[in-house]
Image (tube, rainbow, N blue to C red; front, top):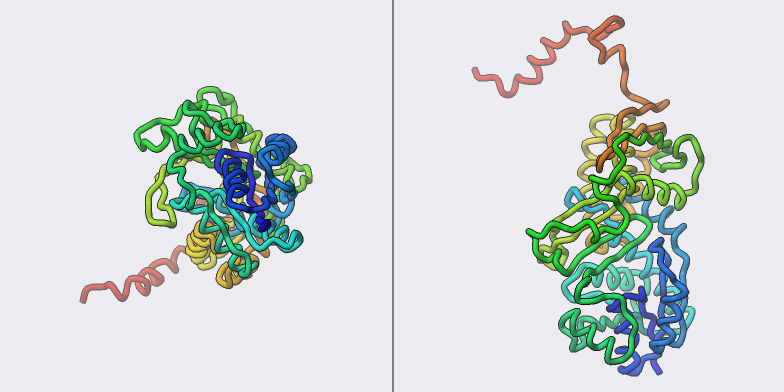
Length: 390
């Protein structure tokens, strides 16, 4: 039989894909990437074997995900269309890398994913595989099988005794990892529908968030967060702690009509408490430590970086080059930021750094002012000269 490595999550699409691929004559190796999604991986492994997978391999990728994917994204301030912190998009190239490594080890000539033909993830998986292991052939069951709706998949699963948790009453597609959660489908496909609180997975509703503010001191070293409230934490613990604290305060919810890579608009809701907190803190520290020209140019780079991630172009020369530029900008992004969490908001209320470019003696209107205001008249004359009417 032909060996195929399937990116397996244990959800509806990939569970059905195991059976479908077996029927097509493949020996399925289910690859489960642990990127911080939680859940019972042992149970999911047992389920894959029960459906018929020859082998299940679990890759612990959380540390690599945080260090080599999340933190570069954070240093870039990459947020897609102003709201999406790119949690799902960011995990795909890493999972594809893991799949390619397993395929090489298991001598498999094929890899597969459970992405639809109208989504972004198919592009992210396949372009990453093309970049890393171009000889591998990609199979996309959801694009090929005769199961046009989720309801049809549910019927197929029941027919083949595949245990599933998705029902017609809760037809939402949920993807979770260390950096956040993406939720789509079901009633969310109506842009007018207000998401109910029970749809959200990790954030309390604002009405149930604490009435008193929660203050956080986050220390950054060259753009990377290393301490929370004075305590050194490894990347995974720090992000998980901020997810828990931010979720309790209802921080990190977004509702977005986004532009997919394939050309359609889709409605997604996201939860990313740690991402929302860290992005706010990192940007605040950059405003204190970066000069105006770098800061403004970096905004342009951030926009491009977010698109590269969203569009599946992680393993590309441009992304690699941008990383080098961004790392250069982070050399003095060191210091502490104070964040206030209150009723869905994460707001910077203080910042300090040994590399601060803020000079109180120049900014103050009180005693100690050394700014020579007499220079302003000449400056304005020269600045406005090209636009002066003769």
